[in-house]
Length: 315
Image (cartoon, rainbow, N blue to C red; front, side, top):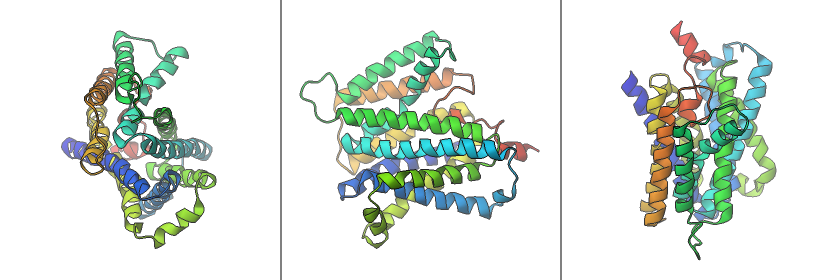
C-alpha cells in the first residue's frame, strides 16, 4: 500500500506541474491569468462537490461547524491568492521560475517563525535558508545586468503565491480536525471562486465554454483542482510524509520540462544551478524537520493522525 500511496502522490505532483504549463499555454493564446485561475478553482469546486456527495462525506457531522467553516474560509483565501499570484508570476517570468519560487516559500515561513520565536534556529535550518536565498538570486538573475527574463513583479508574484499556499496549508490542516477533507476542499475552492470574481474579466470567463479552447480549460481544471487533489489526499494516507516531501520536487521539475520541451522556455546554466540549489535545500529541510506543526509543503502540512478521514479508517 505504501508504494501505491507514493505513486498517487507522484501523480498529483505531476498534474500540478502540468497545470503550470497548461496555464502558460492558455495565456499565450490571450486568456488572462485571473480567468484561468477562476476556471481552475470552479472546476475544482465541482469535482470536490462530486467527491463529497458520491462517497457520502456530506452525511458526516462536523466536530465543530464554526471551526470547520472558519478554517475552510481561510483556506479558500489562500487558494485564491495562490492560483492568481502563481499564474501572474508565470506571465511575468516562466513556468520554471514561478513554480520554483512558489516551492521556496516554506523558507520564508521559517524566517517568520524564527522572528515570532515559534521555531528555534538550527544549523540545518539556517544553512537551508542561506542556500535557498543564493538559489533565488541565481534563478531570477537579479545580479545580471540587462537581464529581462524575470521581472521584479514575476519574483514578487511567485513568492506571494508561495506565501498564499502556506496560508492554505495552515488553514487546511487546522480545518481537518473539524470535518472531512472533501468538505473542506469544497468550501475552500468555492470561496476562492467567489473571491476571484471582482478581479476577473467575467466577459472573458463566460466566453470560455464557447471558445475553441474550452476542452483545455476543463483538462486544466481537472488536473489542477480536481483529480490531483484526490490523488494527493488518497496517496498521503498510505505514504510517509518524508517520502511525500521528496516526491513533491516532481512538481517544479515537471513544470520546467513542460516549459522547456513544449513552450520553448529555456533556462540558462546559472538559472538551472539556482533551481537545483533551491530544490536540494528544501528537500534537506523537509527531511530534517520532525515537528508536524511546522508549515512546509503540502506533504508535511497534513498529518494522518489528525485527519478525520484517517481516524475513521483506523477505527
